[in-house]
Length: 414
Image (cartoon, rainbow, N blue to C red):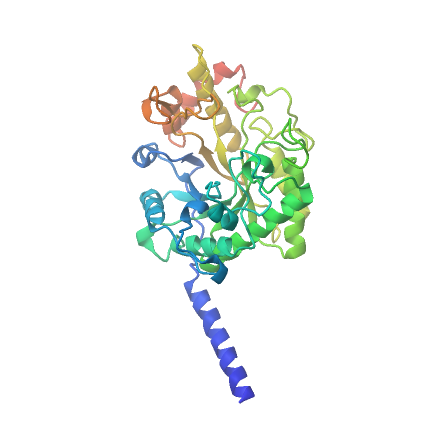
């Protein structure tokens, strides 16, 4: 009986493994013609602009349903929210756009939900934007398995996702990955746990989808005016995260960087005064963007002998309320586009925002102006809109070069 039972267990194990293997989508990662992308607000307009990459936020807390029984490992999901995500994803992926989901946990202000979704250490006394995820309640593995399976290609009716950005600007964890006051080692370790859970779920359903760790533009310095237990230098977080991944079992993580100008209110990306072109620069912006791929080319950071892939998943240029404000914004986009062409491990340049947002600290980053007295209703396009549309086309060269005098540079590669 013992041997029969053992054989039965082995047979069932093989059957489960075979089922998983057969369910894993093996389509190769797509190769779009260029890096042009946007954080989509208006799908039809984004497609008319000729994008090849798009990011969409997914608030995992909004997926949690009160009918769930987390103590029993039983989760019920918001079908309305899932359907709303399908409506955003499917038109883009059907058009050949590479879709990336940004997996984030906004506080719900409902303690019953937040205790399940958010990291147990999140600071309830602090107003923060995004919390770290809870890796011990069973929620995060379940929700990642749900999402990874739904948009793996197995269900064309829902659309297809190729990129998964886990969290947001996690090196500044007091605001964007809140888990309380913790050291760099703890912050990176907790994030590694969440990232590994996400990667395992993604890889279960797709052989070639990619997962990305998200960083702001701070490099050898942390965000100012906060403590070392609230934010860390991006370089140090990246290196610590990478070391922990190697120690716990290496896998193919990638980087999502946000190379905003050093001063978010100054669109002159070419004129950052305080950045350098070496590994000890305080920030990595478009001016010194080559620092990031050079760092990732270090032997200990390679995966199977190849460097990690990079996407620029959130960055934009402010429109100053001056006569040359729109020209400066457009020239910054041209400068950034030209810089990226020299860096072959960067796969996407995803612009933020589609439309100016009234609650973004006074920044006006959009391709569109927002309507007066609205938060982000589109009103009219700016000069950058037409330039963005020409990016990646035969019209780009003339349109970009016309803006070169705005920068004061003699050539884009200066």
